[in-house]
Amino acid sequence: MRRNTLAILAACAVAAVCGQAPAQAQQPAAPAAPAAPAAPAAVPDQMPFDIPYGNSITADRAADIVKAVVAEATKSPRNWKLAISVVDTHGDLVYFYKMDNTQHGSVTISQNKARTSARLRRPTQIFSNAMQTPAGNYLATLDSPPPTASPGGFPLIEGGKIIGAVGCSGATGDQDAVACKAGAETIK
Image 1 (cartoon, helix red, strand yellow):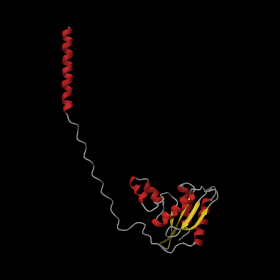
Image 2: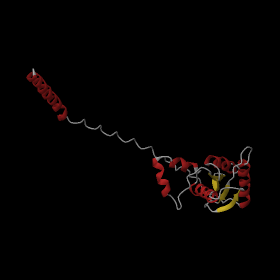
Image 3: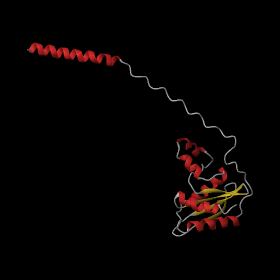
Image 4: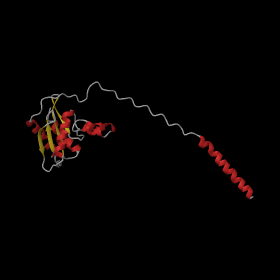
């Protein structure tokens, strides 16, 4: 009986080893061929944001823009404390106003938002959106210093021409944008 048990165990061991041999001899399946790259988006014939520059905004008109921004920022129940910058077509400061108790860092940020918007002829929200995608990492290499990619900078467009830009900082980016847009919309 012992001999039969050993023979059965030996036969099972041989069967197990032989049964695995074909599996070990099989090659792994070839990896699937990579998907063909997506066709590139059509390149538009027209350049986006091709807004010509006009004569730069004056300090008096810039003061009116700031008044509109402050009015929007202080609508009840709001109490947004903002630094507000208005720049000319080159991105150079024309008018600056800092509401009481605005955080210190917002002074420079508001100027950077306005400068970015004037020099690159578009709202800064566009750069914020682009930075959220892997393809948007190139933005940090543009201009010197790089564009400010945060909501709250708007070009000032009059008669189809950029006359400057306004930038706001101090609240959240979305709050900055709401107040700043109210100022930009005073220009027709």
